[in-house]
Length: 111
Image (cartoon, rainbow, N blue to C red; front, side, top):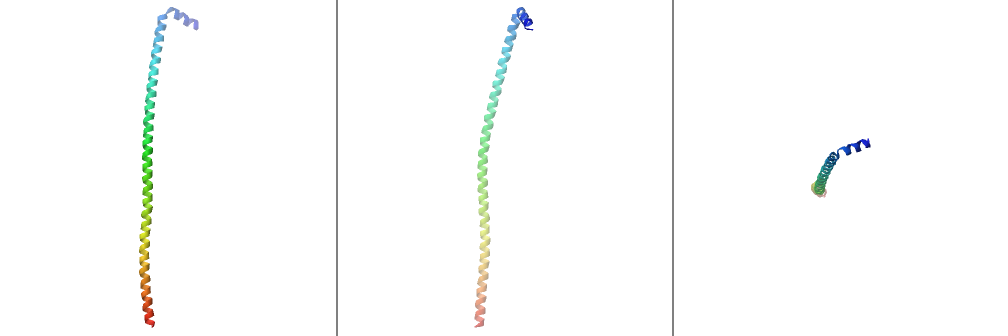
């Protein structure tokens, strides 16, 4: 097989030069395509990394906002409970005043 290839080369050296030139050209094109592909992939990686950073920042802001809202909800719940207890305290105070007046009235009636 090698001998046949050598015989072919001896008979047509210009054909070999052309084939080598075509292979070299194909190799250059292949390398250029690989470089372009690598450049595009790197650009895509950079874009995705930037997007991840942006989304991380937005996520932190939303988490902080959620914590604030949860805290405000707790404060609102406590304020509502305080108002309810204040109302109950006022009702209890009014009832105790009525009892005090009734007690005074009963004591005065027994004298």
